Image 1 (cartoon, each protein chain N blue to C red):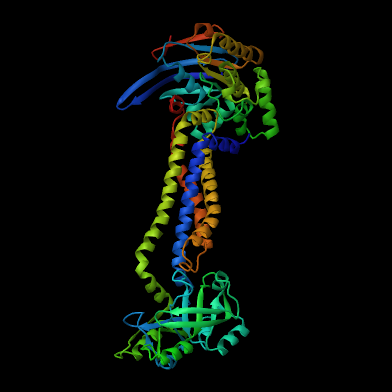
Image 2 (cartoon, rainbow over the protein chains, first blue to last red):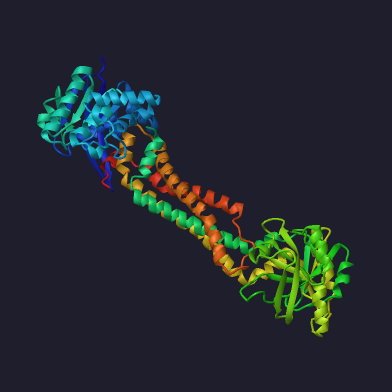
Length: 223
Length: 386
């Protein structure tokens, strides 16, 4: 069975004025469907860059990134956007909810691109919020929620389209211990109960313990 | 939840800023409409001028009279259908602040040449029968509560003495471009008085108006009229009514040009106000736009979000500005001394232009922030700290 995520000889560098700054060097990595992988490493090691390449929000300088059989390097901008909408759920460190939308409206946001009728969109969004235990907070705005609750809304937004992979960038980085445990427990459940493939960037060894495997990066290379 | 809801919520995110922007647009639209209306009012005479009327005046200046004897000679020129004439009487009615045109006219021909003055036939007949009768515009009748049979006493200045006229007719303007504020009486009555007083103005008229059969021959007919009186003591200058009105307005031409230019500068100011708001709003939301792109929203969606918000602000501001313009124009007219602008109304094209400008400004103001937000890379947007 081919891997869900297949990264081959990927390098990534950024240009700052005349300087070429390498971030990833010749990375090759395979991740199977249903895996829960933690990416660890010191700051500047290239964890988030690798996550961004897999999620299709950045492009490698060299090499190929194939996810669910699609070579992302061959997609144009609009195709890549449509691919992200269908295949990727994002969880950010700082939740990144839209402050003028309620919890249920935030969760419904990715479904606007799905073509589903409004009642179905609403039903899906409410179901996703129920999964993360926030059925009673649907009409709350982000400012009316705690950090942990906001991150759970963000997780509901990430899973509402039933994406192929979930990518999380320091999902517990801005949370207290209790909230972090809740969020990690939720991700663990999503992986175990519905076999959601999850990639998580984290500094926190305790968070990484929840993953099935840990991959470490240092100076742009897998170690 | 639709994209429109997000656009509306974004518009109301900074309520004070949105309110001030919309008010700024409303004030600018109001100023634009007012200026355009003043310019329109000033040019109303030009707009109302008929293509088939020629004005013949003294070649030196409008203030010098022409001999009455010119009338028949002008009437004989091929292409001239009808000739009438008028004299600027001036005078004081009630006090010097009551300004409206008072003209001595040839009662037999004037209303043939000026069909836009609508007088009921029986009133016109009564006017023609009575030596010291007058016809007044409907607005004058309304303003001074005058009715048929009332006497209008005038204190003469150019033509000294106390003059009394009996109102025998009230004309209505055919359309909005016709002046409803004139008072017209018999030139023959004026002439009688001039004769009695042995005035130098005896046998003189102010200007002639010729109705011609073919407007395309205006140039040749004008030349023919002026050629008749070359080397005479009172040489003439004949031109189309439009050219005459324009030359009459030329003394204020630079002020009107400035007002004309200012009205369009105001459109530019609206654009800057709105563009400033939209640039600020879009910059603050750079991170959010990146998040939306991450979720699969495209550059087109971002364009719609920013342009939609800009359009909402511009349309609301413009609508309020337009709505306020109507009472403001009325108040402006009431605040001015009576008679300054006999024709003062908001032209339909001014309303259309104000509306189109409001929408266009909304679109244009969104271009720069939308272009920037659309082109920013997701990873840069996510790192952006506003």
